[in-house]
Image (cartoon, one colour):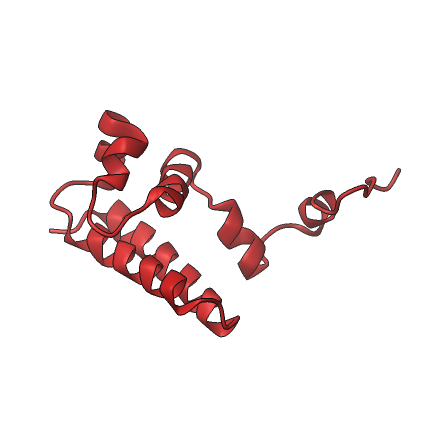
Length: 109
């Protein structure tokens, strides 16, 4: 049985794959995110347990999950957000996006 946390995380990985595909990114990256999503759905325990017990080492030991995707999984599990996905999908608040522009100063109100 898939953990609700695993299913939710798999959804985020598939969303990233879809966004990358629409942007005509490398097909290998798209496939890697989809493969990692399948791995999470096939786990017999919550990914949160693996992150808590074994950290990045435990996550990248899973089939089809490398260091980059493993780091993203840990970010999602520990913060509830994935900054890279937020940027690509446009879910940042305008003020947060403005702060990511190098050299930009926030307006004085």
